[in-house]
Image: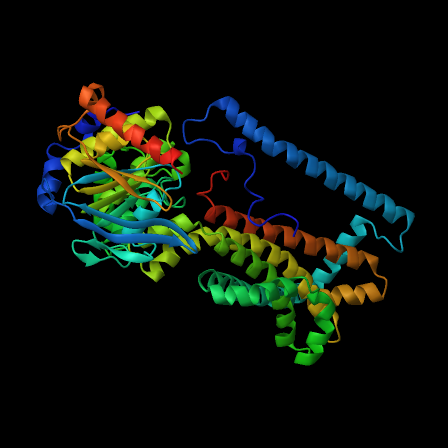
Length: 280
Length: 281
């Protein structure tokens, strides 16, 4: 497994900053998201009710809550995959109807095309929007290097470990130079060790390319580590029971896990999630 | 169709070798795995031939010996009847099968994106698949005039259902997540077909095509049996009515060999399109 350091070195000198300058994704850039009285229903069952949230440009909002509380449903509504029963999702002020341009999603079970190689899977994101084959592949290879998968360009997903598959999924999402990243428990299907490695790599990549991110997770550590704020969902139908500001420095790395602030916020979120769980 | 479609080749994961350097022991093990079935089938073939020879010697009228069967084939080849019969049957088989593949795969794929069509026609597909078309061959032939078009229709009908059913099954099982992935990347409908539906469905369709090939052989012979007998089926029928067991057995053997060869081609094509699958190597 590649460490954070070696991956950072594997990126061509200055390429992180170059791409950032090229696509203008400087700090604070990203889409704004507004959930306006969002109610989600599956048939007769109301999953979540009247959710109001505003996510600023470049902000990371972690979404936690007991299983089945509608976290993923919420994310899918933002992606425009399922229409809300009531209310609306607005991205940059525009009501969502189908996934808007500049929005990319990372799936819990990776969602890779098993018949495409790693590089074709990444290039896919660009090919569907009409980018030429060569250009798409060049960009795909850059991203494959960025996520530490050099040498596996021609591998098929089934030949890779879960962690490597999710690196591919991440590279594919980044390929569209998203202004909003939707993370659907991206590390939920990985073993604990791989999960931790990937968390810090994503953190590093995000710090180089800060965009707005909605981060659905089961892991409270992960929610605190990534979030500027944390939305705790609970109740039935679920609503936002608490919105917590994460008062940690923006430049976070592994050492932050041991700080008293981190532990305090973690405890607070934990007890809120547990309350939500027992309240069900 | 006892086995579920497209899973025959998904054998145990140990037939899959990782892309990492394969060591020698593993290679010999793989070789052994291939050689043992080959040896067993060769033994079985020899035993079958022996049995045939023995039966032929005991009852020369009902069972010609393998040698006499082969020489009957040689005679037919020399006087030109067999080559022209093969050509005529081959043409019938290929045209009927090709039409069945186009229609079966096309319809099966269409079902995947048109829910209404699927709901309203899939029961019909299953019902028609269980109809023995061969039994209906005389009816079809007399309704459509015993000519080449009518015979082609019989071949088409015998082959089209397994192809359509397997294709529809594959198209129906396209993982919902992948369709969602395509939607989040704002894929056009045409790209959904190219990136998701077709690659996922082709291996299933090829399973159907392999079954269709076997059915088309039966269909071809059946179509040639009735009234305006022609081709290999005609030769077979003629030999059968004059109790020429040497020709009957020789032709049967020839047809089986051809069918196995064509199925082998089908399997190779199927393997090519399914090379991304975990258990195929």
